[in-house]
Length: 422
Ligand SMILES: C[S@@+](CC[C@H](N)C(=O)[O-])C[C@H]1O[C@@H](n2cnc3c(N)ncnc32)[C@H](O)[C@@H]1O
Image 1 (cartoon, rainbow, N blue to C red):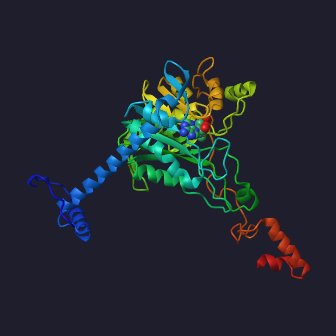
Image 2: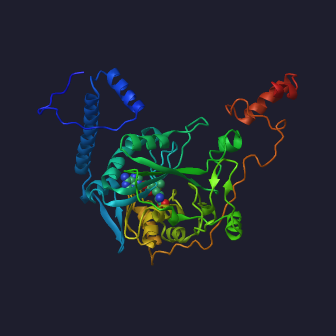
């Protein structure tokens, strides 16, 4: 490999601390790729990173020209926040300074294959569609900030198999835009209907898809956070243990449970599973939309989802942005929690309805009537496997078709039992 010429003499040394095997690995790779020394290899890697950064810089300049601030309209304002009508790219590139946002909390249009009324993008083009937003998110987020994306999965058309679009999005954000995956969360909606009915109810070859992925990412591995802000109530057994004391011992798993385990921290560290039913159909928002003839947003998230991340990842006074605001749940929760906020939404009709959340004032968040859900251990209903055979063709034919075949076989003189055995 030709050695790039340097104007000055290469007489400055940097020592790099490596393990023996790291060094061996690097030297082998460098030599396999034709580099004469580790120095050449490191200089080459550095130039790649620089080229990548300047590509991003150039893209940002182009996007700033393409998305001017004048194309955004102020829709509503409070002391803490602003609702903007228009394409959020105008805000991300021309409406706000670099590194000024503490949390982007959002739920983008999902790449569902069957388009919904709020303008979903085809799963195949999802990543391409998302790229300018990713660039904008990188631009506006503080190093200590977080990007939280609630995103539902999608079925591929015609088969009981799933699209990979939301995983592709995650990979793209990390590999092309340098985001770090802090921790994936899952929002379980216990009231989710079993869809698609064809695979779940008719052919019985898939189960209910009741969780959304919630990707928590950040521009650095060190976003500010504190799980003490989002504790879960202790279980009855843990409460008993706190009351009656705990004897430090080695668990069968090998974990050494120290006596610190018996300390009351006010609640337990929650899992990365948020259990929230999305059932509200007669709340203040819906009534307001119905009374005024505004469309009720079809893909709202419940306020508990943004509440959890806003409490977990921001302080009062911090700036929370939702670039795909819909009915402005994020804005209303941020307002109730004393955070500054900006919400952007393309469809003015959704903003008209969103006003329900702010008029006459924002409702305080109330968790006093908290609901708990039960998750049964797998296979808790006993089943006789003789009576319940597997669907041998994986659901490729509808059960009626199967029955029809069986009937015609019977009329041909073959017993139904024999056909079933086949
Ligand atoms: C999944 S919904 C968000 C729902 C919201 N979380 C709620 O609870 O009401 C996504 C929204 O993004 C909006 N949207 C899509 N592209 C946009 C863009 N470029 N700028 C602003 N909003 C956009 C859609 O109109 C849609 O209302």
